[in-house]
Image (cartoon, rainbow, N blue to C red; front, top):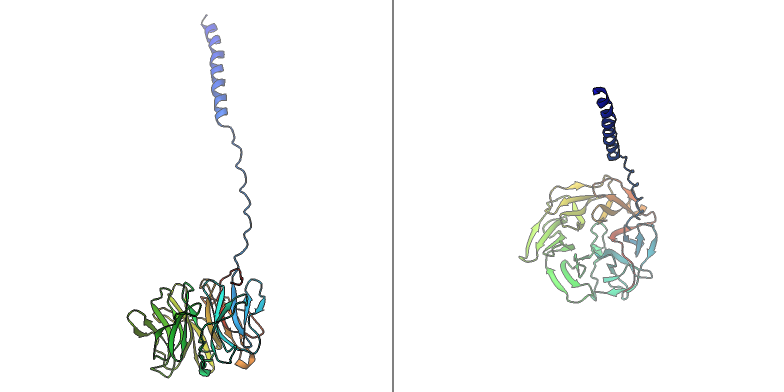
Length: 322
């Protein structure tokens, strides 16, 4: 009798075991693998902008994406020292177009809508200032609404349409003026106290002047500011040697960007990541050409091989007349 009870209990226990076992199997089902990640849509590289420079006395524009060069001026006039607007649509420059007297002009980067900004009857750009080592270009305020330039040693600022002239600095033998991004400080070159050019600043509120560099046997040329105003880019020159340097905004911690001895007219490009400049091999007669280099001094590359000087970088924009 006892054996029959045990025999009857075994199938029932086994049944419960099977139910429990298969319930475990049901809870451990293999999940389907996740779908593969979507293939990212290729994004084309952002256009790197344009460089406007002087080629044999005239303005030309080079598209840095295609390397196509487009003339912006022609004829009997001569142009000097271009400066592109912050929005990449216009360029200010010196020209003797019209009556043969150098005045300040601007035009769109498509070559259209040339506008004369100053109307002096004697040359605003003296022969002694037509010096590539100095590169006495105008400059734009960071908002693109005003243009700053030097004339006869004084610094002026006008609206971008040429109206409302205002003097920023008088009687300091100033060249190559540019405003810091906040618009409160002016950077410029002067040799009023030395036989060479040094960097100076003027506090436009206090009207105080500060000498940044103390060179005695080198001259500073072609100064410009990084977009955040924390770095100053310039060339140092004497006799047949000119090299490019970057310093902090107070003139300290000079860093030699180039290793060869014939480099000039530097300008920041591509959000301060690059520097465009011109260089010759052994003499100016060999022909200046454009180069581009990382702002840490690496990856130096040529941009032109047909002569180019005084480059100015413009961010990429749709170039339409306006």
